[in-house]
Image (tube, rainbow, N blue to C red; front, side, top):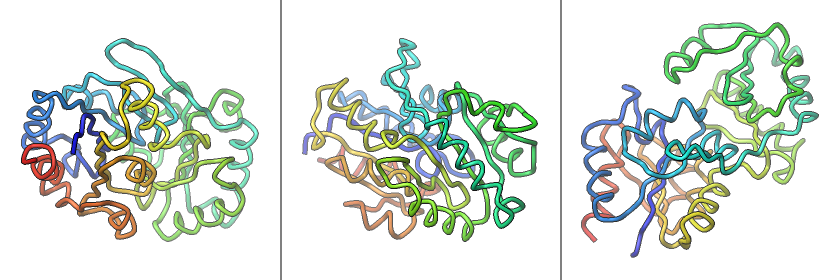
Length: 272
């Protein structure tokens, strides 16, 4: 096995309840970097929310943010890719979410130019703000800003509701029209069809680094990691991942709270 690139998700993978990267994970990453293996982040988070994790793991590569809709290098400032959602589709989604059966149950976040726009600040938004470190911009009507390139539309609600929402909208929008996924059980995410961690990882590996899929390892914990895990030569799911995601992987690591990433690195990249 000749792994030259390790792709890491953030939440539920390198960052657990503490919202920080633990010392054992940092140390394991530093060891493989010293051996010439490069490490990059692929996250559903906003680009600016991912920056401190990029610094924490000492990555020298671009960040894949918004599930692949945004690829930018913090070191050079180069903005490699941006795939915004169609303005017409963003408005359709807003209309859909405002149906009476959804309206009181979910709240909507819109991401434009790496800023978060909300209709009002709720307890869920405050929890998101605390974890992401991002200050939301409050607007009276989200339609007023959806004429701008919208990177991602996020709906937040109870798990069963988000699962139902995902299944319904996947019947409305085929994969080649809109990428729909969940990054956690309460987050439903909509991005451009070319925006997925799988597409972005392929771009980073093949176009920027000249690597093959067989030379890439990825670790993730949720459905928005699925296409990345399927693309790479070695896909690892966290022990806290849903069962369906674990079945997509070639190996299941311990949970994020058990420093599963450090153990996966030890298993495949330091003891091989």
